[in-house]
Structure formats: structure tokens, C-alpha cells
Length: 214
Image 1 (cartoon, helix red, strand yellow):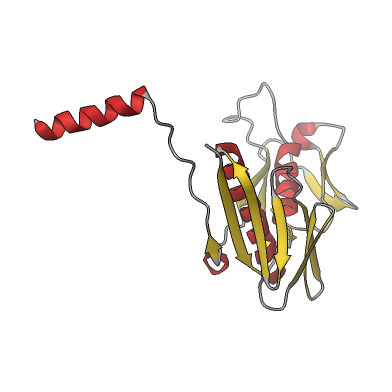
Image 2 (image 1 turned 180 degrees about the horizontal axis):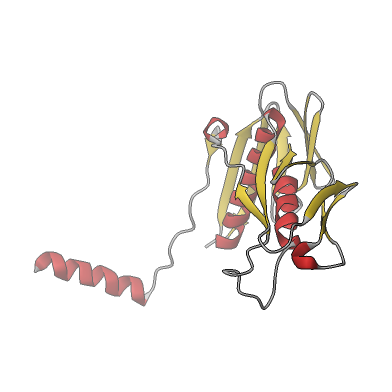
């Protein structure tokens, strides 16, 4: 059975949002964040200080998309106020490796004695700072910060070796995780898709009734 799903989120005070050609743009001060939200069965509308996400007729899959879009928008609103920060640690036991920022990438040299350096891409809008054995990744875009941190960790990934012995690498030690209670939807019409009725459901009901009688 098809259902209508609607989520309405309030735009933070001092921020402005526009939606054009499937791209949502949120601005506040010098911070500007963009996110493509163009799923065919989803409608995005901005009215006053509210962003409304609507799926006119959907199923469980569309319900999941509504929740995903809601989370994306909430992260954008959070990013307008404060950047997201990820921390990583450089660990080397066998060979001292050198990690440094090189333009739009981070280079890792002498990893396990390798002569060829390894590289991790830094996404646009992300700042990477290295102090001793700690790497700090900062960005107002949560996805960009998270992906850059993942790129750094993946750059020192090993295959076919026991990680209990070969512990050298770059590891994420702290992820940006902030509550979004202040960004709860101001109006929520989303309900979980109804469970399908059928023989199995009837059997479960009968079993419960028999228990009560017993």
C-alpha cells in the first residue's frame, strides 16, 4: 500500500536556503553548503524558513529515502553553525613513516619501508592539519570531512598481512558526532509503512488469543 511521507525542517536563524535543478544550497555568513537531492520520487520545497521533503506515494524504500534526505539536511544545518572534526592517529612500529599535506592530497612515505609513496585525496572544503602523530580533519561539510578521513585510513590499508603484527598505519580515533535535537522536524507526517496482512499475520493473532485463553 502506497503512503505519503512528509518531513518539514526549520531553517536555522540567520541561514538561507535555495533549491534549484535538484541541488539544495544552504548559506550562513561565509559558509555555503551544497547537496544534490534529486531522487525522482522525492519533492523538495522551500517556503519561508522551512524545508519540506515529500514523497507523494511511496513504500518502505521511499520511506528510507525520506529519512536519508532529512539526515542530509540536518547535517547541512549543523555544518552552518560549526565545522565537523575528525581525529586520526599515525602509528608506526616497524618503519618510521612521513605524513604531510601536499596540495589537495596527503602523502605517506616509507610506509612499511615502501619506496613508492601512498596518497590520500583531500576533498574540496576540507582542512587537514598534522601535528606530530595526530591528524585533524575539519570541514563544515560532514560528508566531505568523513570521506577525507576514510581516504587517509584507506591509504595505509594492508592486504594479506596479519594486522595483529603489522600495526603500522593511520587510524580514525574520533569521529564527529553531535546531537541534532535542536534540529528536530517542526512537523512530521512520516509513518512507518504498514505491515502487510496475510496468513502469517492471522496465525500470529490466533496464537496470541490462544495464549490469553490459556
